[in-house]
Image 1 (cartoon, rainbow, N blue to C red):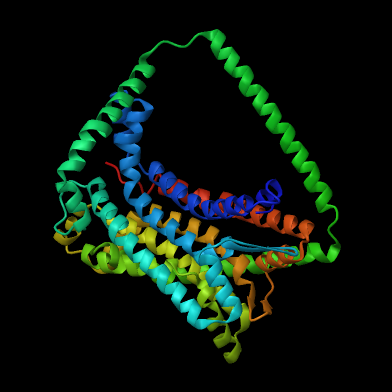
Image 2: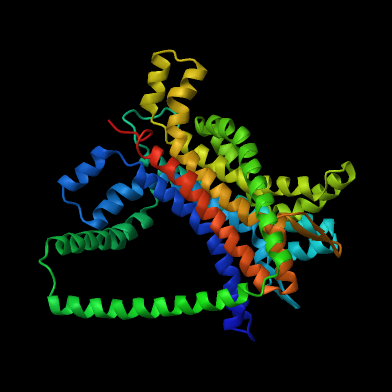
Length: 459
């Protein structure tokens, strides 16, 4: 937001672009990790078949990689949209030093109503958001879920599959069929032929190749120079930090790290059994999915004043309230991924469990947990990132012109943003990024490697 406002200091365009960028960064990584996990789990025999048939990169993408990632991508896309709604209040209304930056929208409306303590306005805003979510669920997500069922890797068709009246209507539409045959099919065939010919064509002119190489070298040098300049400016800014500010940053980092890990543990305790139970029952999924999407989309910060006041009365305070808010914002990442993993379990493997009369414990040990393991890791990774994001609004909260805060890195960042203390803001952001990268390297990367070897579904 600071960068966008600096680029367009006298226009609303900078605030608009900043809000879009904030929402984008809160959505894209959830979907990216889902695709990454799916690609790491593609069976070896399918990869070998694509090599034997010498598929081009485009053919491999549309015939193997995208279909295999479809189910997880659909559910994580729903979670990304829900995450965008969740962080809407923080994105459309932003305080930067003595500047109050806000955009017209439902997020800023809810934030203004929350700051004023107007419960009636909060409820009307949440009601409008719920109506939009329900409409999108019926018109967009339910048809996509039913359509993605065909990408499940199994040899026996399931007796119960998701259905959508909208998808049935589209499939029976003659107009849509004619338009698809006239536009989409020829374009797809042309692109497939083009990529296949490029694969078989001889290498390009070495002169042109050298020219392109020099252009990329110049671009790379310019990028390196810009990066070095940015690092120098950052080091100068970090040099202005005082000893108490540095201690506050590291103390807050430790407190927020413990909250994030506790939140992930609490989220996994109920989302894993609930997600498997819902994912194995398509009819129940049709009912529970929109409810979960609504619950994940409602900004917890809109309901947080009620939770916070209750906790203050019982003596919990923001220390406990921040964990509640983190849980409200992150547990859905795990739930949606577990549901996607349970829905992708092959019907023939479930029937094998029935044939051998496996107990519930044996089914969990031999099928459910190994089958959802790649999806579960994706859920925990994205939930961890969501928890670090949510800490910025969970540890520093304003209500009726009062500021409630607790020890944490999110509180340090929010406080530095309000006061315009850019050295502290930069230092805290760097520490948060370093913590996330360290946990990724030491834990999540190794679990992804385990998911792509031991728990890959292949013959």
